[in-house]
Image (cartoon, rainbow, N blue to C red; front, side, top):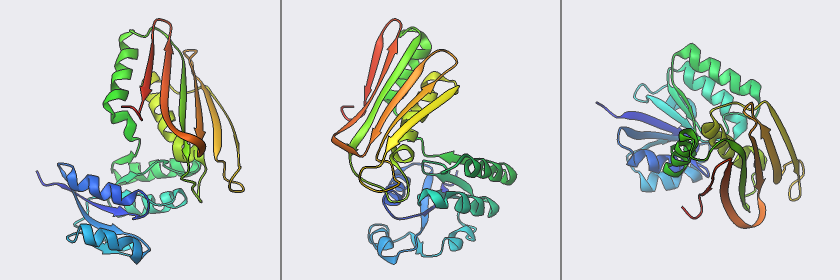
Amino acid sequence: MKPLRVAVIGAGYWGPNLVRNLSEAPGAEPVAVADLSEERLDPIRKRFPAIRTTTDHRTVLADRDVDAVAIATPVGTHRKLAEEAFAAGKHVFVEKPLAGTSTDAEAIVRAAERAGRTLMVGHTFVYNPAVVTVRGLIESGELGRVNYIDSQRVNLGLHQFDTNVLWDLGPHDVSITLYWLSEEPQWVQSVGACYVQPDIEDVVFLTMGFPSGAIAHAHLSWLAPSKLRTMTVIGSKQMAVYDDVQA
């Protein structure tokens, strides 16, 4: 079986990691990278000389040798790029968050359905062995009924300019929580504050309530002295702690 040939759009903070991971993944082959900046493309050219680079993403979308695209650009561009990619007949991987609004997210899903192509979002932690293990403990009943989940995902920086900490870090805790509980929240509450940049929240407290009676709370921050990545599941029989920093 021939490998899936993937083009990465966006060579900023996360795009190079996608290129590296694709180059190491069996069944995948990174064949092109697009970014508006020649400067950001230079490290790609040096490390992966066989990969084609361009400053015009339309070039890779028009390339018949490209089977799929991975989008690692600012969240405000996700809808436009994803819709263009689906219109070009490509499968699409979008880094989290999928979109900045539910309207844009739903539009991306509809574009995938119209094109008959696969849409995947970068909720990578649901493939983490430790996260999968905790789900098994919940499903087996070993923890009993899940009463609540308490999460901390905090660190000092990196402050984003185009999105707040909820959209930057929160998708991990939300995706893991939904994966563990296998249900959608009935209600959501969130409060945050902007201390470093105006109009961009750098600390957020998110709470979700579920039909089963479980509550999930997440503390998200770019303004904390230590890097913490913990999720604690409080069950009626036992408790489990997932610590991604110590794992």
